[in-house]
Image (cartoon, rainbow, N blue to C red):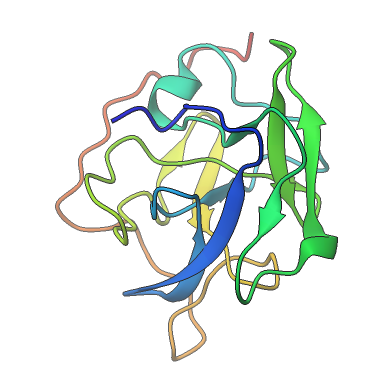
Length: 150
């Protein structure tokens, strides 16, 4: 599966997951925020994108049901591609989410910060009791988090 495949218009929708309804790309895979980022500039480059592929668009992103078009945007990445943003934050997939609706990247600490699925408001997704989650059990991420950002 190539989660980096571009389309003329990337579509972002909502999908039910164990965390509640979270943003997903057109392929149904969960989208994440990198809390180490402040603003629209992506800090995930180089080796980071192997684990956290950005949601790339070649045009304006489209909002599906429950997603606010006014919160969708794009930012130009270091490689020149347009990355979709939501509420001003770049969006990423987690490469080890093997199927649509999985949220295995939830709470993982890698590349200098934590990664969380995104709610319809653009905030970190929370469980029904209002708490965020710890890293998902059963997922092992082996990444070099000591490598500086390129």
